[in-house]
Length: 293
Image 1 (cartoon, rainbow, N blue to C red):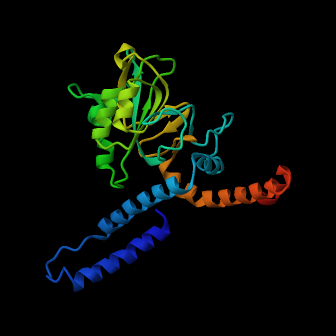
Image 2: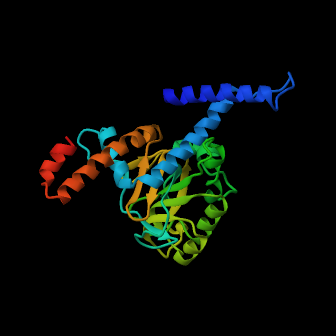
Image 3: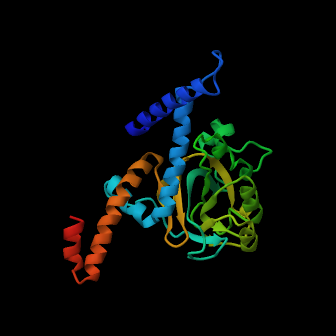
């Protein structure tokens, strides 16, 4: 945790103790809130403020510019910088647009499999946390992550579907249930269907493509709250998903969120100066040399 947050929480704790001493908590046997409880509250506020800063001031392009500097791509691979490729808004508006609001929240993850593939060991060995015990549909679990996450920031459902499948893994009933459980958005690395029903829910939904075929034709839910892969980008439970209806979707590793938010103002300022210089006649080569270094 950042030093400033620890200092801030400690000061807040002292102030609250003083307030309780002089106002409400006049009884010597009163239970004061602990330092841990106050630090928890400050952390909750901080994440929500960070997400508001992200959606109000930046785009996924800005995030990728920061991540490409902060993340080191494995040797021989291409830097992906958090970009979840080829995802398009399908609800409440279909296609790239500027009418939907940007949304960001921690990820709750679901991994779908081909029907004939056995669930991963993590799901079978700990079905109560990572699997799907008999008698309960997979979508009924989507609210569990945000219910247990102390940040209070809600969640975005992220679904991995096997490549080259033609069925949908999210449809009207699934979207209706997600909406009822308070999910902020859904990102499907695969196909959706029932577009009229999806739009009727008002739930923001991104996917790669559509289908008319239901999930049971060739897919099944295999695991939940596990790391998944969306087009080669790993998304872990709790990572920050940032959906922009015009620019696309990125995943920010939770541990890098603070660094991303710290770096983006510097990068956007440099690019702003470079763009202004180019508009006034400077070559891109000279502008990059002067402002990007």
